[in-house]
Length: 151
Image 1 (tube, rainbow, N blue to C red):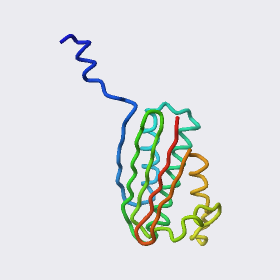
Image 2 (cartoon, rainbow, N blue to C red):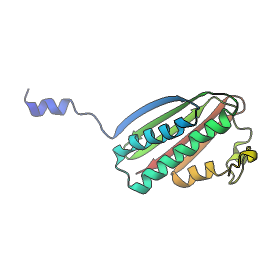
Image 3 (cartoon, rainbow, N blue to C red):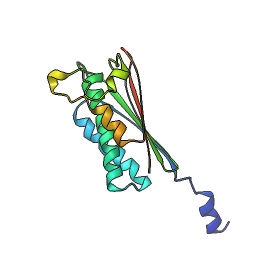
Image 4 (cartoon, rainbow, N blue to C red):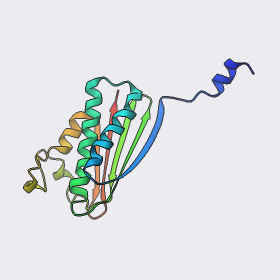
């Protein structure tokens, strides 16, 4: 077999890739998750604004898990990222307290932690920086945030 043919048989579809990251709900892990998502998304060659949007949306989703999902304990957060062609899919899950009313939580300025000077803009920021955001939650079972951005 020629070296050219050998190279062709070892080719992988570089437009598809995925990863999973599990970490504890410590505040210092927010910047870790943000960095990992940013580095993973570099495969799509985003511009600076797109990269910033992705990192900010991940930061908001992870912060929600830390602050709201596990308010009185440490729990596990899972971040999955997948690239399919030119689209980045990021999913962030917790098994925390869940959201009683997702529709209400998606409204700008809604917060359950007013005493902490929270702005209630996390989901609004995610929705403005990503092409799609879906939130699924069940009280007592946790929250799943699905985000998508095409580069």
